[in-house]
Length: 509
Picture 1: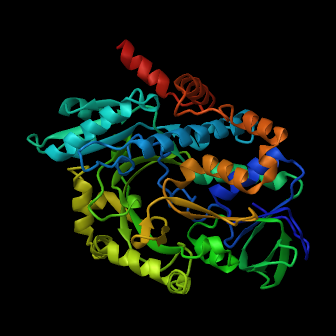
Picture 2: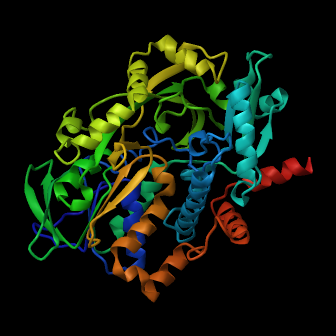
Picture 3: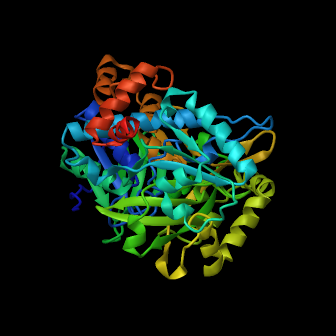
């Protein structure tokens, strides 16, 4: 991918920092809503999607809350809370609408190059966990977005779904599983590249790779002055703009701090690294066709929820297990070990210390993870694949995530395991902090951002534009069952996801 030559002084309408899924989605939405808008995109690395959006750095699940147990916590009274799961499922359906629009408008030629139908499963063992999973199933299936979910405690049925998970397992062990045939695997790296390929060809769009943003300052007229360094030539220049989006993954927090907006004060970051075990035996990879999620260990971050994961990466089937969590002071996989200490400021040191005190189990968990031996990692894998052998798996680095720490009146500071949008009061700057479910809900997040930061968003022209791109716009997929059913049927057809036909075949049988 070649970058366009940029002028020495530029005044684009919009600056996007970071060339990942968030910037790509926002840039494409804005360009479709207003073709005359000018956009400059700055990425510090030499290619797009090199950090969080890369398929090896991203979970790729197509987070729709079908299988992720951390989105459905059990409350003290024993009931299961599903509000977050419903919201995430709705947001993922909106994302699929946008991606279907990209396919229909030939921005993406082949949907299977980035999205494929892979069943989503939850798998647990032990009386307490089985009881929880059954309650979760009952709570979720009372909502139309989770219709079609299957539940079983029958070992033979589970074996027919995922034979490797049951082969060699203790026959006396009580197990349970849920399955959603509608689940997907998404290569967010490929998806993001398609969007940037389109944007690069659009007039008024300038993608600058190997360009690092050094500082962000307010100009006298309240616009923003961005200091950008070309990492190849070492030359620095200024860019003046009306709007800045900081979508730099783990690098967003330091840039938000440089903007010095009051709304950004008090935020801190806690970096969590990860590793995958990647199967190197084709015959094993072929025997598994599902994303199987389990329960996270006590004190572990959501990004570390263990899963045995079928993936499609650049047209090739892969099988991963993990991620195993770790700790690094880097905020980016290609970042600096000084990222964490340099992020500590007078305005966020109290929330960060408070969050640290309240999350001692997490600290202990991460220390234990870092100290794991290859045999320890194999034992964790064997809980999901009892007959696993160490020589059949290679250890690979996963992505780097920065969990959000924010001020809290009661606790002093809390560690958040989600995404946080921080916007300037005048809507001229926005930054996205945090991680999961991130990429899967990127479209809903960017639509919300546009409504917060662009006064034109409420104009009849832009409202009509949203409706063309997202046909369900203005309605609620969570509240309107008929709208959700029609929307899901349409996107399943356009994106060539064959889950519906699978379910029909089973019902016929």
